[in-house]
Each structure stands twice: as C-alpha cells, then as structure tokens.
Image (cartoon, rainbow, N blue to C red; front, side):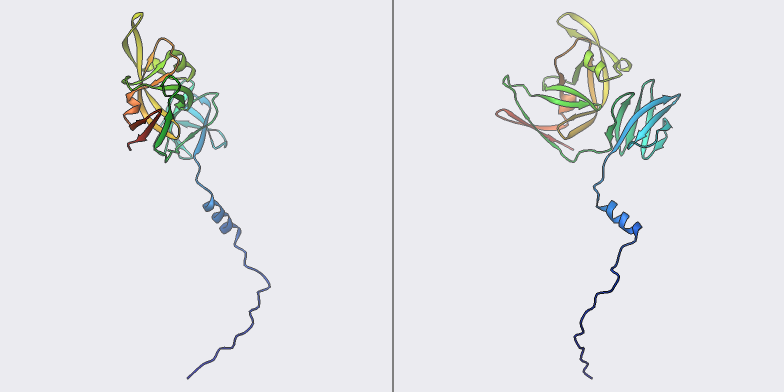
Length: 227
C-alpha cells in the first residue's frame, strides 16, 4: 500500500519555547570561563584566620579546616598560609586579595637582555612584586634582607647559614618560598637564601632555573618549564 503525505503549511506556535530560569542559569554558568579564587586575610581570631573568599562574608577558619575549597595550612600572628588545588600562598594582613589555585598553562618565558647583557625584569615572590636578575652562577634564589622585609618573608624562622662577603663572614637565612612567578610561569616550593645586606635585585639562581630548559640566542633567553 502506498501512502502519500501532503505538504501542509507550517504554523508557528503562539507561545515560543522558553527555557526554565534554573536551566537558563545553568547554561549561562556553564558558558562562563572558570576563574581562580581570590582570597584575602581580614584578621586573626585567636588560632583562626579570618578569610574573605571572592569578596564574600569573612569566615574564621582554623589550621586544617577549609572554607569554599580554601584550606588553611597554618596561622601566624599576622599571616596565614592557605592551599587550594595544590597551590599554596601566604596571606598577610592588610594586603590586597591574591589569586590562588590558578596554575598557569603557559610553560614558556622569553627574556631579553639589557644593554649590559643582563636579564632583568619583574615578577612576584609569594604574590609580592620583586625585581629580579637571572644568575646562572648562583646555587639558589638570593634575596636581600630589605626586600625580604618588604615582601613579608618570615626568614628569621628559616635555617641560619654562614655567608662569606666582602666584609667577612656574616649570617644569612635559608628558607622555602611558596611561589616564584615570572611572566605567566610559576614555580612552587623554591629554596632561597636571604642575605643580611641589601641587593639591587633578587637573584634567580639554580633552585629556580633548574625547573627550566634554557636556550639563549643573541640577546634572548627562552625558559621552557620541564614539567
């Protein structure tokens, strides 16, 4: 048996389809790119850090506890170490909110030498701005005490070390930096030495540089992160 279907005119329905508000909100959220958490330290309440996550309501959180996926590792007198998605930051009272948990996908940094052939630029240590110079002859990152004080580094809690300087033997401090960032690349848990005398730059030594494959062509140095 053969059936024939007539071509009937299509009539639009009077009421167009509208997604439910909840569904619409879900779709809009799914379309937005994921952003890192922003965290600020609003105060210290005894053994608890007063965290402000994404500009929300302050929340007292003790070491070992979490708030909105931000875990407090330790609480000091005027600072706290937090962790999210494996990344750690030291928060200080009075500082602007820092971004945590957003490890950059970029693994490549291109540096250009200055007129003296030095690779000098700016970056961050534990979220604080610093001026650095690449020094392949230094075994660790080296930071002058004034810069360490400005960045709020707790170097006095580090390991005392004896250092030979032009003025004789003096004492420095060995410590671990939560993070060192240059360009879009960040390295975590970097060993550093804080020297008692001031220095014009933070020296980026091999405790940082060994994380990279280094290539130099004329006045350019390319740092390619190994992992």
